[in-house]
Image 1 (tube, rainbow, N blue to C red):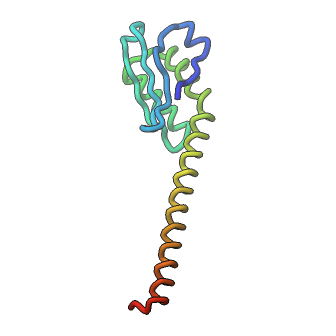
Image 2: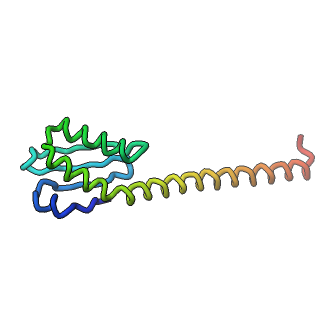
Image 3: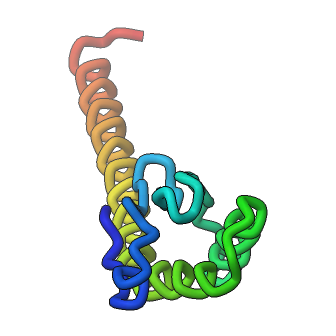
Length: 122
């Protein structure tokens, strides 16, 4: 899922790609030659504030300057609602699938028990 860059980030022309990777549950940003062609990957944590804290730590580890860190954090913050809603929906769908599977198992068990009673199988 592509994140929308702020006008400030666009003006700086430092980002070639900034995405939320739903398969790995990571923020992933690719910076161009102005920032040394670096790629930063950072996990989505249990809270958004922890997510941003981890993201900033990763940016600092790659020696990104403080001004750019603030700009990139703003992009992530702007996408927080979209990312968190996506993750909640994904969790709800997983729980629904698990519930549906349990329902199917229960139906098969009931049918098997009825078959056993009707055929006198022990």
